[in-house]
Image (cartoon, rainbow, N blue to C red; front, side, top):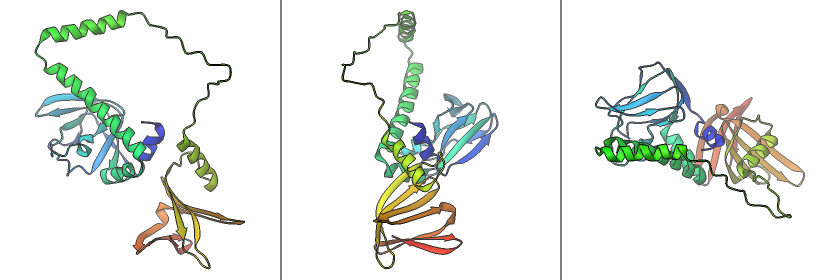
Length: 260
């Protein structure tokens, strides 16, 4: 996952601190009881079930990820902080909503979770083997890999008319354009944009509705006429669907409505 992905996923998250020995997640919690997915930002922790240690958790580990993957209702293990920890709690339904709106982000997220689970499963399989020869063979292979000389692979030679240019991420470019358009700081990340009609007198206006981490924005340009609206989430009092229209009620000095 990229740094931009984490900023989007952690939108609306809350930070919780735990001391060494504190319980981060109770044992026996079923997937339907888990309301938040947690990301271990600082510190170390471990999972155990029925008093038996399962695995250790480090910075960047997701806690409660099986609640999004396990449809069989298997309960969660006990999660205990080994050191002082800081955890970001993300509401599960909000996280699923964000992932459903961005297929590429969802793919990267579930690949990340899958790699974590595969890595954990490999360790479990290794520990569960009673064949001492298999473990000794694995140690021998690891030792031989460490002693092998590093192979220098020659990079392919570029032709005279070719240049090595890094490809820019189009989403990062769109983030910069969005911040420049509305005058936001570098931390604001664009999550989604929609082409909409704003219902206004005398004529409806075609424009783009932007949804970022902290704002809902509207922009329209027709000939020399520009319409720009910036609404903070804190200002929104109600979002209502009326037949084919969406009405966003907000307060900006006085009560206003944005009808789309």
